Length: 311
Image (cartoon, rainbow, N blue to C red; front, side, top):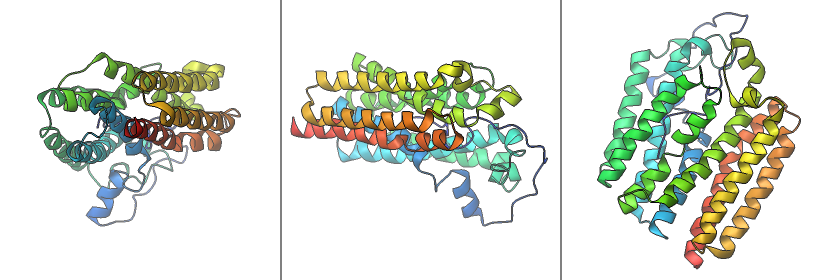
C-alpha cells in the first residue's frame, strides 16, 4: 500500500523559469481542484505502487489472499498515493510556481492553500490507516514506517545524491505490509522482494530524472541521473536486470513454473524496449519509458498470480 510520494508529479524539480511567476489559474469548483491535487487523471503513480504490493500478497498467502486484503491494498494504495501528491505539492510549491508546466497546480497557483492541501492529504492518509486497522497489528506498525519514509522523500531530493533510493524504500513499503497483513510478521522472503523492487524503482525513477537532468543541474538538485553521469543508461539497465533476476529467483524457489518464466521473459523484452527509448537520452524517450513502467510491474504480478493458480 505504501507511500505518499508522487513520481508522476515533481519528483525532480525543474529550474525556475525566466518568465517569473505565472498568473493564477482560473477559478474552478472545489471538487475539480481536489481531483487535480491528487492527480486523479494520472493513475500511473498508484499502479507503480500497487503491482508489487499485490504480488507480495500472493507470495505471502501462497496464492489467493482473499477479497478483504485485496480491497484493503487496492483502495489503500490509491488513498496513500493521493495523500502523497498533497505533501509533494506543498513541499515543492516554491519551485513549481516558476515552471510553466506546474504553475497551474492548485497549491502552486494559490487556488488551494497549503493548509487545505495538507488537510486533504491527512484525511486521505487517515482513511488508508482505517483500512489497515482491519488487518493485523504488525501491518499497522509497518504502516507507520512506510508513512515516515514517504514524508521524508520529498525533502531528500534536496541533499541525497541518489534520492531515488529513498523513493525505492517508500514505493516498496507495501511489500512488508502485505506479509505482515497475511502472516503477522516479516519473513526473510519479504526483505528479498523489497530489495528487488527497490532496483525497479531506481530504474524507472532514474529514467524520469534523465528527463529533467539539465534543469536539476542548473538549480543544484541531486538525482541519480546526475550522480550516475554517463553511466546512467547502464545503471538503469543493470537495475532492471537485478529486479527481474531477484523476483525470478523468488518465484522459481516458490515453484511458480512456466507462467513466471513467461512473465519474466516478457518483462525482459519490455526492459529492452526501454533501453531503445532511453539510449539517446532524449526527454521524450526517457519520459515515455518512465510512464510505461506500470506495464512491467503488471506483467510480473500476472506471472506470480498465474503461477500460483496453475501450481
